[in-house]
Amino acid sequence: MEQKHWKALKENDDANALKYFYDQYIKLLYKYGYHFCQDAALVEDCVQDLYLRLWEKRRSLGETDNVKLYLMVSLKRSIFEKLKKNNKVTSDDQIEDTFDVSFTMEESIIHSETDKINKDKLLKTLASLSGRQKEVIYLRFYNGFTPEEVSEVMNISNQSVRNLQASALKKMRNNMGDGLNLLLIGFLIENFQ
Image (cartoon, rainbow, N blue to C red; front, top):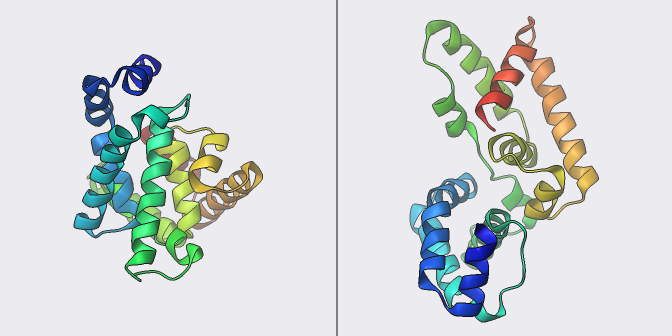
């Protein structure tokens, strides 16, 4: 279905195809953008610019098997460029470490007393992860991306993705303790796919 719309956008100047991608991914893109930058105006500008560029450059768009991935990579690059241009960050490493997923976790955990204890432990554990580890967990388990797709979004090797994922999950298991680690990791996987 997406390929049909992508082709219609590229070859037939089909504004409805652009609307399809807008409707399909606008919420996801805003949410993803806010993980890197809490400046709502900047994220909104980047998302709107992304769709404007899609329309303006529709004839020269390349082929893609995964439009969602294409849009997320494009948005991430756009946000990073604006942050650098506005001197809000000075290096790629500083940008990568800004990724934050904690509020998404808060929305996902049930609000009972028992879960509050687990939530607190989980949030402390997530806070101890690096920005890149958080992003890998978010992309793998929340968006369901393959390691190869995560590699493309983050612009790192497949092996780096696997290493970051393994180290993040190991840290989570170690920090959760008391046998809760497998339960909560299962909960994460279940709620982020």
